[in-house]
Image 1 (cartoon, rainbow, N blue to C red):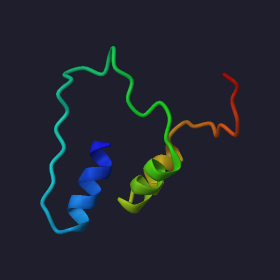
Image 2: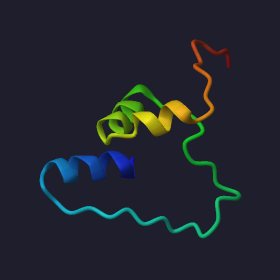
Image 3: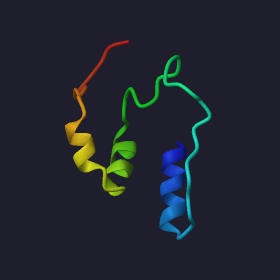
Image 4: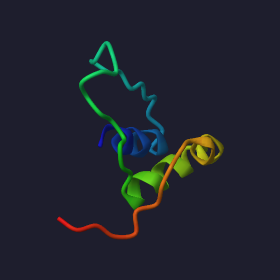
Length: 64
């Protein structure tokens, strides 16, 4: 959500800086799954090359 808001603000001409309050990555998972709109936002930020080099698996369906 924060990345999406930052992207919208940056597009509107605002200077944006994201700050994470967690001091270590342990205990809180971030980005374990990307919804299409989140992926689209990252691609619009110019991160296609970084995303393509990250380990990934496309989930086509799931059962709960």
